[in-house]
Image (cartoon, rainbow, N blue to C red; front, side, top):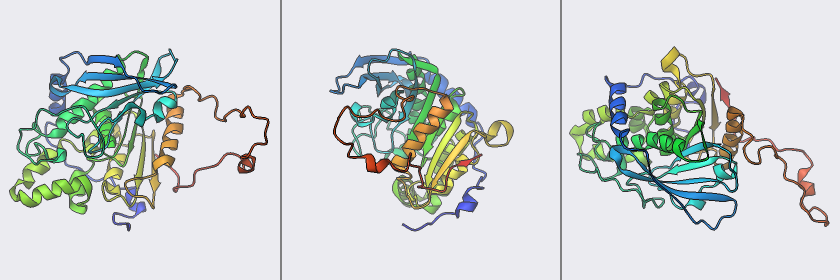
Length: 371
C-alpha cells in the first residue's frame, strides 16, 4: 500500500478548521443529561474464565435511553487495593467477545472494563448488546444507521454508552475513581476521544488510528472500510449529502479532542487508508486547544511510516503500557519488577546468548512527537 495522504512534515502541522455545528455543546449536554437518570450499574456477577491470574465479572450498565449495555470487568487475582481502571472500547464490527481475549491491561496490574458495542456483533467478534433504536432514516450498517439526523444517528447512542461506561467503571469495587483511562483503537480510539471531550476529569486517553476524526475529509479521500460505507450510502442516496454532512459534524472527533484536557497517547500508520493519517493528526494537533487556543502539551504521537491500519501493533501496546505507568505514576502489580527473576533451574540458561546487549530499544518509527 503506497503513501497516499499528506507528507509527514505537513501532517505534523495539519490543524484544519473542522465544521462545528451551532449548538454542539448543548446537543451533547442534553443527550447525556437524559441518559443520567437511571442508576448506572444494573448487574455485576462473577464470570468463570478458567484463568488463575485474573478475576472477571459480567457487567450490565444502563447506557443510552437506559438500554442495558454489557461489559467485562477484569482485574488481577488476589489484589484488594483500588487500582486505576482502563475503560476500553472495541473496533468497528466487534463485540466484547470472551473475557480471556483481552488481558493486557489486567495482567499489567490495572482494572479493565471492556465495553460491548451495541448492535455490532457478528462481523469481526461476538457481542451481547442489541441496539433497539434502528428506525431512523439511514442505511443498514452501524455507521449509516439514522445518519440523516443527529438525534437519530447510531453514534449518538454509542458515544453515550461510552460516557456511561466511565461512570459504571467508577462505581465498580476495586477501582480508583480518580485514575480512569479511556482507550481504544480505530472506532475505539474515536470513542475514547469523544469521551475525552465529554468527561472533564479523565486521567489519560489512549487513541490509536482513531475513527470519526475530520470525517468531511475522510469521505473525500478514501472509500476503504467504514468510510466506504458512508460513501456507498451517498452514492445511492445522492440528495442526502447535506443532511449527512450536518449529522457527521456533531460526531467529529476533532471537535471532541479540542475540548479534552487529559494526557493523551496517539499512534498512527502513514499507510492507513481505513482511517487516513491526516484525519488522526487533525485531532492530535488540536487536542485540548479549546481552552487556551493551543494544543495540550501533555500529548504524545507515535508514527509508523510503513504501517497501515494495524499501526504499531504490539510495539504500540508496549509504548502505551510504559507511557501510562509514567503518566499515572503507578506501581501497578509487577511494575516494580521489570526484569523477570531467574528461573529455578540448575541447568545452563539456554537464553543467555540473547541478553548480551542489555535491554532492547524500540526502533519501529521515528520516535514520539511530544508537544
